[in-house]
Image 1: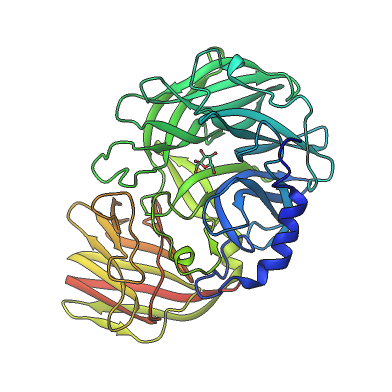
Image 2: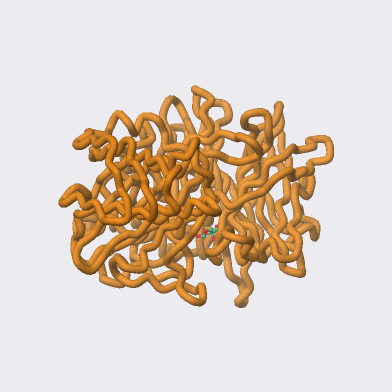
Length: 494
Ligand code: FRU
């Protein structure tokens, strides 16, 4: 051990001592959060011995990014999580500036984590891949032989300073590590390494290399087979905008196609942004015993102000709801895991509400953990607007423009201002989502400071907002005549 500053034991003691100091105001009710401090990417998301394990990039000591640890929690249903001791701390020469993102896999009954050791030497960053093993799924021991993959194995196929976020998968009897790196001229690149035992690795192939404009680095790759296709997901930085896609500087993308395993090459058939919101990054997936492919993502964004940090609340960052994935018509489709519906207590249901050129208002119906399901016939309207979390000054505004099939969400008129690296600041986004038999179908999961929208069964939009004054009202308006065929409101029980 070179650096005694950070250890797992020290982190756990700190959390125990300080966890009651977080300010509850914007804390979520039913989304995953750490007890305190900063979190980013989900890591090591895995189904192990009948339970779901979620690790995450973690700096418990402050509500901003710092030398990364791996936080850890487990769950039997993906919704109710038990916090476990911190799994990894940056306590070795090869990870002294951080245990960066990675993944988990089971072998011979043991749980293996592969993560990126991040170290800085003479102001130069070096990133290598390292393994930690656990017999009980809670206490992890880093291998003596770490790092198991370094720049010598990379053989000039990438940049050792940007070489991170390994996702380990098994294909046939062989393990493959899918790792992010970049080209010398700043294009994203995903490389693959191969191993029989998770310890000895060799370079296998360049899985995919980006073109100019497709991002200067691709972070957090994941690769899986689903519904007859291969899917490669990743988080590109500075990918160029395309119509309504990739407006956040840090984006996410799903490529759908086929892996040629002989050559180790991904043949892309279609690619698209995964979520059209403002706070969705670094998604990772697992497959469970029911063969469900589940994805979870960090529900925050790089390069933005984060009110709970700025206000000194002692925490920053949450995870999205776990979402079940499918591939349909060359697109990745997401829906919230079905068990969440068992946690919804329905409160109100309305049918056949006509909205036409005037505002229909519902008072005091939207709360911190409100779930809404709306089906509106727009065959006779040009546009439809819904505002909620509404008081005299603030509101979240959702709008559907029938021509062009455009759904948009804005947090511009609500809560603490959020400023980001995007110029001008980005607080509104739009997605193309065709009506289903003339119907707009919206599912909305609202938590204290977040919103997840599922739109017409094909798109999702995820964002945070931090109300200054609570707003519980909701209104509908339309140009032309819209008929709300059904509107249900419930509460998600934590
Ligand atoms: C993505 C990321 C990863 C890295 C980690 C560091 O959000 O930048 O590439 O491993 O966060 O915390």
